[in-house]
Length: 390
Image 1: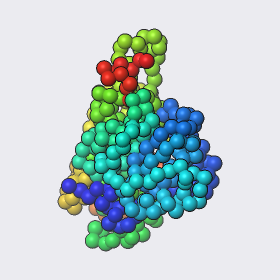
Image 2: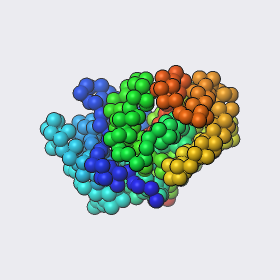
Image 3: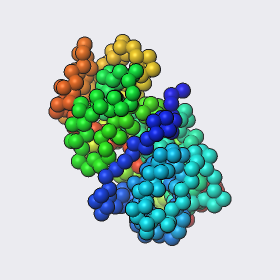
């Protein structure tokens, strides 16, 4: 079993999720926009109980605390993260009095009373746990009937650009060297890629550690279908960011049909999953069968990268190249720019020696990023028989 996210953080004494929130108004505007996509307006949290699992160093939590919940519990198991939360909230004493920080693992925390809102960002799909769906269900149990659960998902399509950057990074670094040296080597090569991202407010060194070097981030993923499957017995999809969900039904037609919210969400996902490949473009829906084939090819590449990290067998490069051929052929049918970016990184990987200066200066691969994590909100049913209409 690969090292978990928490083990990795503890071993290095880090919490690599730092953000630049000196412009607090801009930070709050970003968080408000996210919550709006998820169906949560600021006044909805006023006087409500809130649980956040895995807040990291607490940067996103500052906004949530500002909304005036009656109780706000933050569950964090990383000692460095807890220390960072204390330091961060010392700068915002008006919010600090509203929070309660609990040192506990996500699946060990229990509360006598469930919460109106439960947030769990960036943990379930990246924690390096063997069964993220089981952990999701354990976290979801803290949500009160009628309450809202917010999580993040990642899949093989949305993560493909990071998977390929990870493969580049793993081909470059010497595994025998320490983390600091790895970051020093990779920053000048991949930093230019990150600089192309508008709105990027994470430190580049933290991003490289968390996405390219953290062993948990090449572990099992939690996709949107995985999450819906895990929660379908008691929860319904409520909102999403990106907001890909559309429901043209007359509201009266929903009554008595069990809602079908989860079914419609999955149909929308498979028709649009190719749109997670490149954040710069939006394409029309595709045949779900074609998108399933694209997903499978991306999953094959991800599996090969994971195997390379375990075995360090360069013959695995051939598996990655074959997978990229399949992906390029599929993507070319709907995006020349994205297929060119994929072809560029494929050509770089096919060279006997990786040209790191060319990777740093790449005009196709460099600015190409997927839509990374997707946010989903779920409403917990109030009727034990599973009815969603009230």
